Amino acid sequence: MPKIKYIEHNGKEHEVDVPAGWSVMEGAVKNLIPGIDADCGGACACATCHVYVDPAWTDKMPPKQDMEETMLDFAQELEPTSRLSCQIKVTPELEGLVVRMPKSQH
Amino acid sequence: MSERIVIIGAGQAGAQAVATLRAEGFAGSIVMVGDELFAPYQRPPLSKAYLSGALERERLFLKPDAFYAEAKCELILGVSAKSIDRTKKTVSLSDGRVLAYDKLLIATGSRVRRIPVPGADLKGIHYLRGIADVDALRPGFEKGARLAVVGGGYIGLEVAAVAVKRGVDVTVFESLDRVMARAVSPQISAFYEDVHRAAGVRLLMNTTVEAFEGTDKLTAVRAGGATHTADIALVGIGVVPNEELVKDMGLTCTDGIVVNQFAETEDPAIFAAGDCTRHIGREGDPIRLESVQNAIDQAKHAALAMVGKHTPYGEVPWFWSDQYDLKLQIAGLAKHGDKIVVRGAPASRKFAAFHLRAGRVAAVEAVNAAPEYIVGRKLIADRAHVPPERLADTTIPMKNIV
Image (tube, rainbow over all chains, first blue to last red):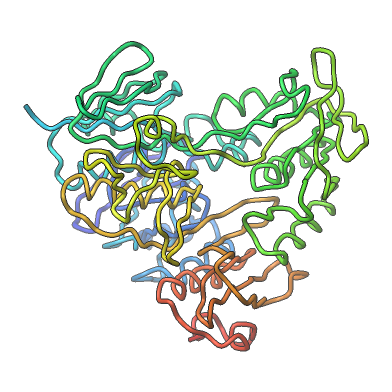
């Protein structure tokens, strides 16, 4: 199971195993990691699972679909590394992935 | 003795209330009672990814078990609440237990509306509300099986989309003249009717199901005076609020437990949130919402009120539906509009319908159009006025629409 490190806005780190096939969002929610709301449960409908992907992982990220791209366009504190974590599927290649959470999801 | 909050209903609203109560520092005990055997789970994927098999059951749960342990929330599952004694402040459960409460949250949700026609008890007739319903329905989705979908609403159409992709022969019976008539505007209905027909779904409008036929198992549906062969049926004709528990105790219910903007009922110790409630919405009329958004937001306000931090519920309602590769996202309620402005061409499979009320944006329905949805939602929240010709002009990006 790939290990993923989630870093809260306050710097607190959580390193957890997330099953391949799950989303990065699910890995946070199922491990009680604060900072990702995911109101819609992963339907790319609410934009409350915004994360910043560590630049070292940019190349390994799955490409953004149109929907994610536009939902992100309107997220607060958008950065070039911003993603919706419900749209990042965990694969063995993402072993060690590091994501950071924004101050707020709303 | 420390204060005890009892939550009746283990769904989206109940789970949210636990999270908010603890986040707000509530230090008393919490007990949640649910009549299903499962801890709170997501219902929206049931008619979509869970039905199709893309999402395993384990992934439906809203919170891991550790959440309830950490929140010191006792879960009583597979048990329903039978009655409330408002004087003694106790709830009687179906297993004979009697729970004392200081504050009570009713988050009982809604149940499917049953179809009152002959043959409705035949084997092969399904409804869709819980995990068990989908587990029972899915094995019937074999290639070539004939599925009768009764009701062209969200549930019926989402199921139709999953089924037809599996090679099931699908017929949808809708008693009104368009699909999703209760939820969306005619422009959206017309678009989705075309999409379903193109995918191979047979849509029969203005066709009311009169009876189900079969000796022990369903074999046909009688509708619109004709007989349609069917192996399996899915009835999706709406839901009714689970309000009886408090109605019996003398609290006002008018198709939904009546609550104020703080999710309080007439009894100061009893709160209610989610599908089971009716409240005065942002547009000033009493509404009952059947949605994840309402369950989450109203439960937050209920929990805040329970700990004495009253904040009024005024969030914009939002909804979504996944059918095929299309994402329908809605904010606000179309019924509040007096003028419809369409932005983009339905033929491009990317467009939106804005609903204006006296010139301000009251609702938006967006098909594969996230900017329209996101900006629209903000415009609704801000009660913004936007000239119709600007909204319709796709050369002006949504970001610059105001």
